[in-house]
Image 1 (tube, helix red, strand yellow):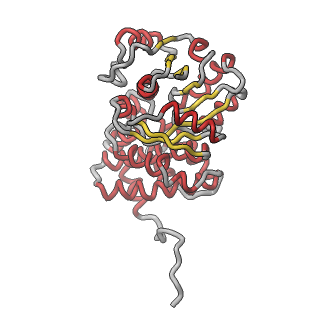
Image 2 (cartoon, rainbow, N blue to C red):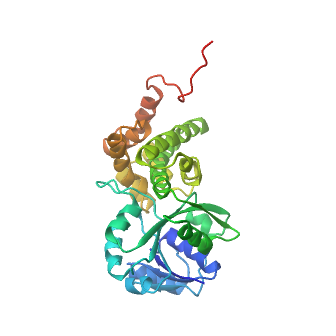
Image 3 (tube, rainbow, N blue to C red):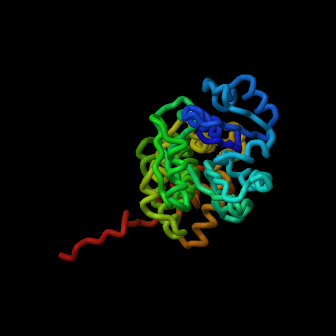
Length: 337
């Protein structure tokens, strides 16, 4: 049994608490919101974000950050990506030398273009930082539906520790040394999911979505490899796997926001309607800046930015994609006859 501190009590932190308590671990969940902690303590259910999922009586809930961190064998950082830096700053005084922090959020910081583990390492240099990611909607994990994810860490022993803590008969965990590739795939797919949602909102079909997913993973992989990620990672669970589930699922907040934009909502109206953090909106500018920095062509990402921030109608964006210059699909060459 391990002592686990869960920093963040939203849908994902709550769902992972179910996994961890089912595995027999002692879990302490922190939130800055007193009303949220009171609801979880009394109701043993997150009524707004994960309704119907009953939570173990063994989980401790607190607004005391020090209580959730000190003495824990592992800390899970599950706050939405826009709050990663501010939360890490608050955590830093309580984190011990060598304490393991596992980031489970997905995003790239606007302005700095840093991944979330890079932010955590900057704000909490004494910590060991790892990542857990994959095609894993909280709504399904909380209901104990079969799910597979990847644990990325700097050492094999750290990755295997995370694997052992989380893995059970319905939550399978693979390991990988490619932290950067895992995080880039997880963050960038949210931008592509906005595009897929826009296509749905416009009433387009499966052909359109298949094209966006297939060409989208090429954009992600090109940038990811240029930045130092491994190509194999983008062909795996945190690349094409996460992209498929986020572009196709009714649970995807990014797809839902995109659908609303396709139907004529503004970006601000769509985010308000979704009522949860739409992380693809926050990652979109960073993705475009990274593509420019590394000189990687990312036409879908570029047009998503224009729809979000320059008022380009979603239908016009699709037309621009379809009418781009003629291309070959890959670098394969014909044999000379």
